[in-house]
Length: 144
Image (tube, rainbow, N blue to C red; front, side, top):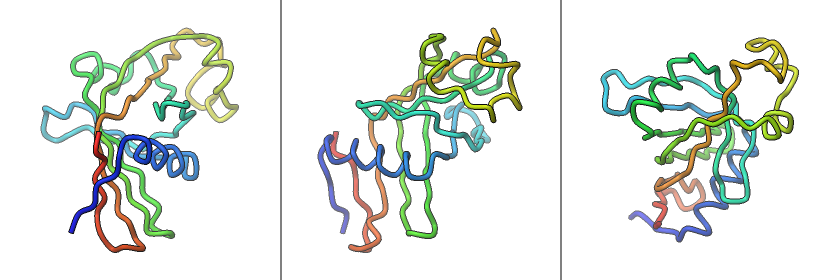
């Protein structure tokens, strides 16, 4: 039997699991086959549970988002048996203050410092989703 939780609890679950793991699989081009999927580092989750990523201006994921802003993320913690799948919309933007806040030295593997003009940010806004409640042994749907 599937359970349903309200928006407040759903957003809290997204924020807690996302901040715990800081990685996910990002799926873009949801209208194409195969769907483009890649591992991504979660840079930040804001107070509205919007998830922020750093991305290259010319990347395939940016092109996918420009074509269709629909996106799906999966976050999995096999150790604690926590699995989350969320659907929503994405937007590409550039705000130097946000870049300054979230840029990490590991990002130097892809960029030439936080002032690199190729840096863009992707902000994912969740719209629906579900997760596996390991204790209850059942799926929980987010009731938006």
